Amino acid sequence: MKINKNSLFVLILTLLVGLFLGWLIFGGNTDKNTDQQQHETDLAKETIWTCAMHPQIRQSEPGDCPICGMELIPLADAEQDELNPDAVNMSATAMQLANVRTDVVGTMIPIKHIRLNGKVQVDERTLASQASHIPGRIEELKVNFTGEHVHKGEILAYVYSPELVTAQEELFEAQKIKETQPGLFKAARNKLKSWKLTDVQIDQIVSKGTATENFPVRAEVSGYVVEKLVNEGDYLKKGEIIYRIADLSRLWVLFDIYESDMQWVKEGEDITFRVQSLPGESFSGMISYVDPIIDPVTRVAKARVVVQNKAHQLKPEMFVTGELEASLREGKSQLVIPKSAVMWTGKRSVAYVKQSSDRGVNFSMRELVLGPSLGDSYIIKSGLEAGEEIAVNGTFSIDAAAQLAGKASMMNREQPQHYSLSEVAKNKLSAILNAYLEVKNSLVKDDFQMAQKNAAALEKHIKQVPMHAFDHDAHQVWMKFKKPLEGDALSLSKAKDMTRARHFFITLSDQMIDLLKTLQWSDNKIYVQHCPMADHNKGADWLSAESEIRNPYFGASMLTCGEVTAEL
Image 1 (cartoon, rainbow, N blue to C red):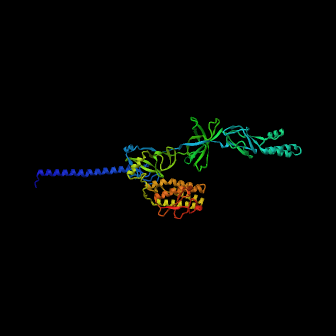
Image 2: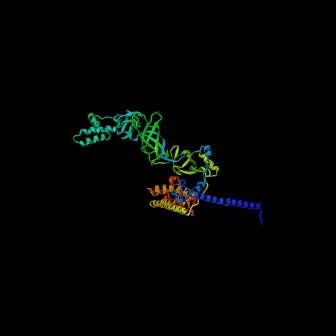
Image 3: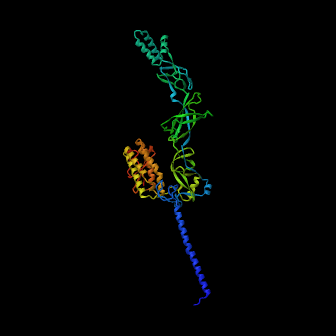
């Protein structure tokens, strides 16, 4: 068969083109697959593992978090998952327009500048009562007005005393028979001594031979007359007070301390003060005494400063203003944040915590437990940790953005949230609840030692909860309650008496009620009960497994005082 040369050429050309296209399709795809597999292998080798609860953890291999024990997840997944679904994302432009400024939470030894008002008063230890030891009528007053200065031994008044005249006549008669009746003469002298007459005065009477009608009353101390209690012509009984005399060279300055400042003011603190009537003058002293009792009317206690007043610049009843730079009694470093960072929502206080990632910046609301105020800042008891960054300005703008986004804010925070708990977590929480109920039962029975023992068992149950028992959001909730619960249980176990134990049970119960309301792990019905007379009539709550009231704050003395306020 004869083949046309042109046809053969076309056939060969077609075959070559087909082979070339096949190589491109299949050969190139093989290399591409190989490169992709190699790339995926390299990515797998470069995976960084982190903890969802502690993103600062970075490891090259999977495993458990060294802090909380939770299983580590790939960093890429952690960045894709929003750690807090209620966080508010804000761009740099939005933060600038809202004037949002942030600061890092730090620690310091809390120092507070306290301004105290007070008054100059007489030193009670220098106040003396000048009495007349001679009964009779005041014939003459040598000191006629309040404020006059007197010296010890100075004559203050003359008193006419018929009884003293009679006693002198008896002395004269006893002197006549002194040789035969010496005891009678001695008794007559002693009778005059009972009116505070000295031996010199009695000898003068004897030598004179006639009775003295008006006897002088002499000052027993030096100082200023601060009160005059009699007038000329008044009749006095023996020992009746006629003047009050005070030495004003040493005075007290008494400062008013309100309840909110009492924890700051203590003995030994230095204080400076000024008097309005002495502009430019500054005085200083040391607090020598703080009243242990608050005045029930004014609701203040007094802090006493002793000052020397040799120049008599200070006068009793002068108003003074003092300034005190004080630290807390324990003197330890504590978390402190500016007041501008705190937002108030009724009984709660919150702050916005900043978190940064490759995808931008977001803020999440954090509930705080505030300590004492330091003027322009607060001590933080719980809710924040050192090193966290918080918004200190523009917090209302952040909260408004959260409201618009339908996320947790001051306005809509009270939205119930369901937490998924593992069986391990439920079992551990149930053991804690049972241990708490045992503490409650011990207080109901007025059994102090058993209450301490059960509180120690409760603390042990709290410590034994493994960190990995909780997942994600539930972990954050548990971390919020763990330390306060542990601290209250420890304090109760070491209480010195039943009164202190019941005091710690108040805060322990509040924490347990909030924890149960938040995590809702119990399948059994638990009752929240309230006694309006507990905590000095402020009222206090507790948890009970029975609806019947058995009061742990009063025990047998008021066993059934209270009511059920909620069922959980």
